[in-house]
Image 1: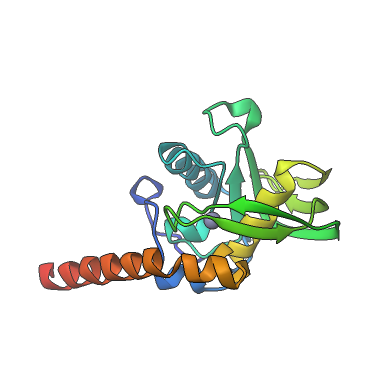
Image 2: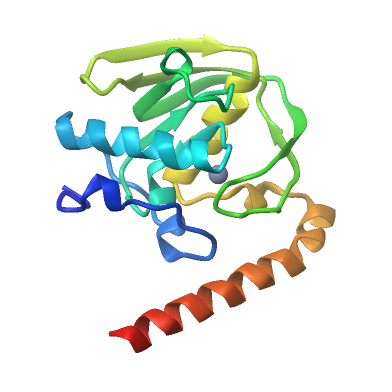
Length: 186
Ligand code: ZN
């Protein structure tokens, strides 16, 4: 029921430190037209920022859904929607550079499993059960983290964390300014 009344067309990318990025998202119960419209909007928002994955909290909706397309090019053939995803059989670990649309310009090495299984539902409520050993696996882990309020910076090592400090402060300042403006406009 979360965000049920929100017009999908009004959804926009939100950025750190927006508190909605830190919330634990709730399970999707209704596989309805609204959900499909939200997913469609998420793809558009993702493509506009040249991303390869986007989780619902990144458009301010705390529901367990993410979309991805590892090609970053609008092409329905490569589009995937995962609702209520659960990862298992995570194996191997590899460090790889990661970024996040909600934390622009902040990249750093994150250790992730290189193979895993994902069980989820598609927009029609049909079960999905996949295994992968490629880039998808990193995307799945990054996006599933978002649904638990976890950001890639939380998985940075000490050096990357220090390196990101200034950019994080700039995002914090920008968010404060934006919030202040909104309050004044009311
Ligand atoms: Zn992200």
